[in-house]
Image (cartoon, rainbow over all chains, first blue to last red; front, top):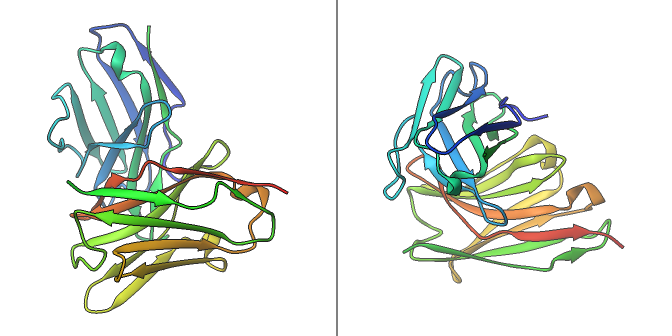
Length: 110
Length: 120
């Protein structure tokens, strides 16, 4: 049981916009930044969004993040086949004194 | 370009100690802005943060409650690396283990991962 809650799956067709939600609590998302990671099959997670809505260099602007209260979301616009991956949200938890993660969302491009 | 190179056995017997090392290139384990983490991933537990070591004016560690009694993370400044030891392993400790740099306050760089299987 992951501390942060994500839907297990999401899907869309090429060109569509997809959003993935992440729900937490006041001790994690409510009081700290949210981070998003993309994990392609057989590889390590890769930082996709940091500090709620910032993109590392090299990440396309099709990816965007937002946060409101104890929830966050990742949006992917102009969906492409190479976006098929697992996506994880993460935040620091002040009560657990630990990094916590969502259970991951498997994105399928139909 | 910062790189993390993991090493260690892929098979550990139950009740024994899991030991992994993460060699750092392009950064320093003694960096006062970084922290060096271990995270594991398994189908049953998902991504699970295990702990970290970091240097400010002295060395410090934080460990996850779930493994606190069994885990040790140590820096090795002479080799610019850090290690993970997890004692008394059980089959449920089977996972892909990642070493991960935390810099700027977030987990920004992951090693390639090591699959560790706990089995006799």
